[in-house]
Amino acid sequence: MLALGAVSYLWATPGVAPGFFDMFFLAFVERLFRPTYRKDDFVLGKKLGEGAFGVVYRVSWAKKPNSKKEGDLVVKKATEYGAVEIWMNERVRRACANSCADFVYGFLEGSSKKGGEYWLVWRFEGDATLSDLIQSKEFPYNVETMILGEVQNLPKGLERENQIIQTIMGQILFALDGLHSTGIVHRDIKPQNIIFSEGSRTFKIIDLGAATDLRVGINYIPKEFLLDPRYAAPEQYIMSTQTPSAPSAPVATALSPVLWQMNLPDRFDIYSAGLIFLQMAFPSFRTDSALIQFNRQLKRCDYDLVAWRKTVEPRASPDLRKGFELLDLDNGIGWELLTSMVRYKARQRISAKAALAHPYFDREGLLTLSFIQ
Ligand code: ADP
Ligand code: MG
Image (cartoon, rainbow, N blue to C red; front, side, top):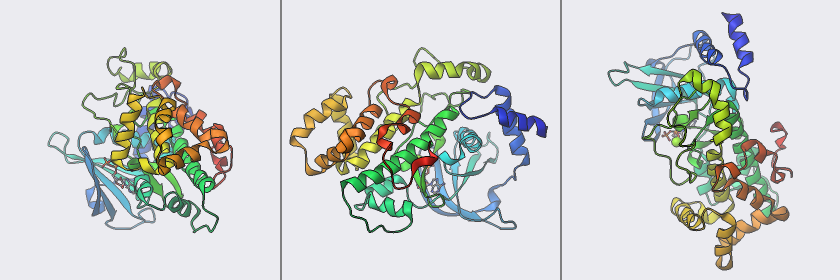
């Protein structure tokens, strides 16, 4: 069994559509050899968040009989959708662990028939999401300090800010590339779902509750799911409406690379990441109401950023002008990347992998981004 497990592990290389067999067999073997936990192993602490499908708490281990049980954790107590989120986290842990928060374990507490809850356990990555950080007046210098670990006494200015923003964008795109190469589309990329990991000093993605795994047809766009309208791309469906329902798992495994190429569902996340880039570059779009207003303006311009710029630039506020100036550095290479991400047609948007190779990332960031290449 172990040998088979090893073979299937090698087989399931990220970026290659894994077969039906190894996906499920691997999950089974891994599950067999990992420690199992239950409710009583954890002590609930402060509530960190409450979404439509679950509540998140900070927790600690009840007893610490071994060295693995160290450090703080978070638990999400979720409704029926928790099962899908556990699946996604297990998959990410095997295929692209660095993209997302470190997943420890997931289980059903109680019986699913009697309204049991799914418990999802992660390591506590840190106190701040990108949303908290961009709301600060100090942004982006607060992030520079967190990434480099100490206050830098270098001269502040547009160039420096651009360098910090470039580093953050590089980390987000790196994490997204990991997910997309694994066959997962997140569908809820926003600053609230990007956490700063104090351990690795990088940004990681959280909240796979809305994610869809197209390689096996898991969570194939449930009709009742509402996308966050502030960051959602204009397309309502991320797969062509010609593909009416979720194909069964084996069929999806065989077909999905083809469906993926036809529909490029990953570009939905790219649009959302582009809006994050925009919020980082323009201080005036960092509040919810300002972002909603921007979305309205962009819609009026048929989602054409260049047309939008023409309408707002002549009477731009100093904050708005500052954003354009930052994106215009180095012959407008930042503006070029932004306009390749925020486009009406999914097909015309750049992929996460291509974005990482974009000349915007050629100049050195805060850290060398060599780990990306
Ligand atoms: P939801 O949006 O469904 O409520 P999330 O998974 O986005 O659930 O988590 C809610 C909040 O909990 C996040 O915004 C973040 O503040 C915190 N959080 C989630 N996962 C972690 C983690 N691994 N480490 C630290 N904080 C976390
Ligand atoms: Mg969330």
